[in-house]
Figure 1 (cartoon, rainbow, N blue to C red):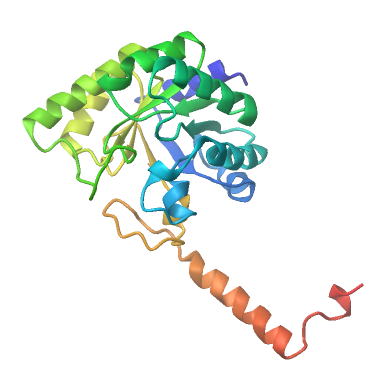
Figure 2 (figure 1 turned 180 degrees about the vertical axis):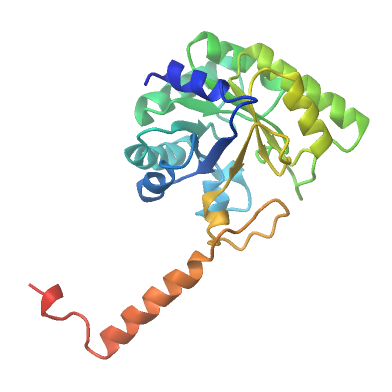
Length: 260
């Protein structure tokens, strides 16, 4: 399936079927979630999740490309979207140059950039150059200083979010991530625009949902309101490591079966 067909399939899910989006930073995880997700995102969240940075701003192009090359090997059917890191799309020419580099080196299907009205010309330029773009408004981690604060509480914020969403749609984005956006305004935006909205802490009113895979597995200690932990993989890892340790200490491993 071509990029165009894959993206059309995502757009056609609006008002019909919820879109499932999860993050991945490696082939092993990508292979598992590829059976379940519509979109796999190599997010710059890898900076905070894997590298323990205090901000996603420290993620650079080289880092996200290397992880994406690994993820690509595990993706067969999902749409592969990659975040353009902070300070890699400050103007139209920089955005196009770096998007082309990312797509060429990773064979991804689309890129994601943060911002609304302020990036509309950049989005438009990328789309005109046949680069599919997923937008991202509400809380935008690359520009947040201090604590994350949900968006859409005041009338000013609501109006800005609507303008941002419309600007991205008009610029040719095929979808928009709404992060930490109040339920009533995420519903309004979803009903107002023709492209899908994908929520993260933005209620069930969106056309789809995205979460960080490490968070839903219980691998991180994140205590953010919108994160639901679906399992505790730390317990499974701890149990396996504990058994390995006991067998090594008691000389039960390796037996002849596991020796040359």
